[in-house]
Length: 115
Image 1: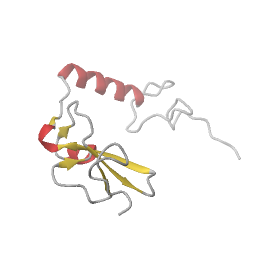
Image 2: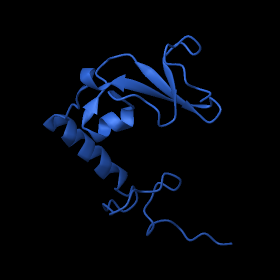
Image 3: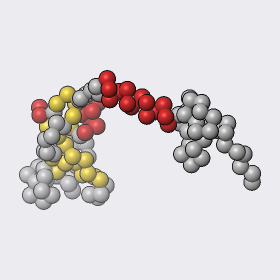
Image 4: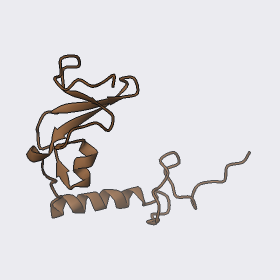
């Protein structure tokens, strides 16, 4: 238990080894899975593993807030941007895949690469 420091004297924040976090503390991913967000709170503790090279911050579940949802105008802007990523600049067709940024054109308009 090299990273067990519940008082925070050694690492500045209460620190626990991987998979040893106390109840009521969750990572951002765990909050997101529950449709929550940290809501502006500072990390309450941290997980540390892989010889201290990996760190995940832990947030209090009781202070977490529900995730915000996009407004209809924001959702429309996102859909417009995603459609633009699927529209070929040469033929103007909307494809069912994103246009490769390397070529900027759809796979039908991209010239054959000869080896």
